[in-house]
Length: 91
Image (cartoon, rainbow, N blue to C red; front, side, top):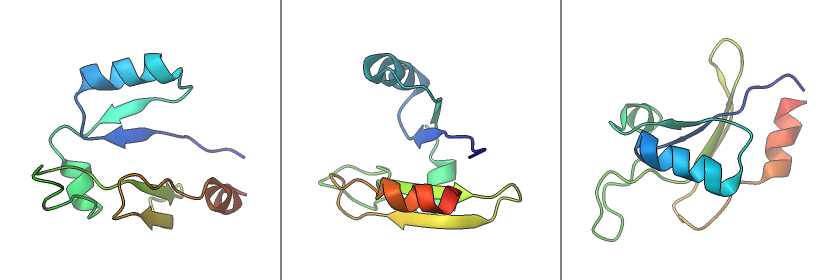
């Protein structure tokens, strides 16, 4: 499968660097510190336990033209996406 994988969160670039090292990730993490991407994709909690501007756990697959081919957004911050479903979309 020819796909590019990126992780995006509202954490700072410094936190992203630490996560990459700690988890030994083989894909880049991008910082959405100003929350522009999260707002555009509609994945920000208005309030999560008193915290503002926290991104919902979500996963998207976009095609080369930027069309969303898969979207998963969870209201539960502890829930993970179905990786098998994502793999199917990528095939």
